Image (tube, rainbow, N blue to C red; front, side, top):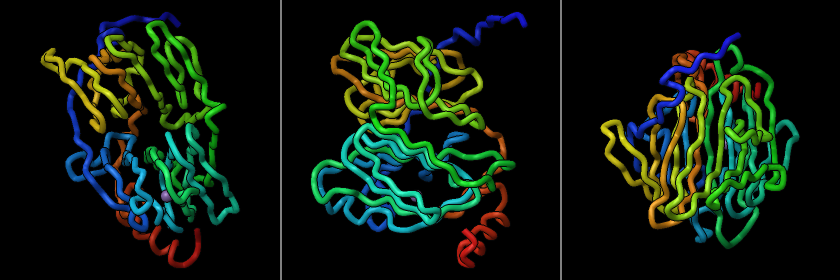
Length: 291
Ligand code: MN
């Protein structure tokens, strides 16, 4: 098959929206910043939620997320600092440590707890929810767990560093997490001051960046440069590539993209299905111990 190159392939994605995270409390009283999944920005298909947590105050995180269910999607935990222990009703248990990722497919249902494995110090990381298509919502649960040492670090010119958790970069580095249903790209990118970052993204994907630290600039739809700072969520428009520049500071950000499912979404707390009847059924199944 002959590959065709259209303008779309090379057109850089512009910033279509800048979303400020909203302070939220979840679990048994964990203080966090909700970027996706808040009233002002409910979802970016297939992404249902993005929470950032970052605190060195134990009272902000020590209560953790005791036993709770999920059905119909995936929860992805990426820790930058600290330790979290997870445990579930399928006998799966482990500790996610700094730099590690847990990509959990809840599928038809799982009951798990996510608790800090520390009594003090910094706990920092993200939880992302990725939707599953209707025909796979009731699949068996599964895990892809990777410690920091299994996540490749791609070093580029100018001191740019890319940790590749999922997806393949334009330089051919492949992340260890694979999910053919949404073909996610999950990169943790550091760009030194005054340096540029360019990366190709699948045209079909929705994509965003989330600034962890520093400042970064990219053009909006009118070609005006917009600066994003710590805890800003930047939604990227259509196109084939992302091009951005670190300003006077070094910048670190997540670059995440996924194939939209284009299906109806019905949410009820920890359950995400296609219809409200299916959500009600999930509550019934959970109460009756069928998870
Ligand atoms: Mn959970």
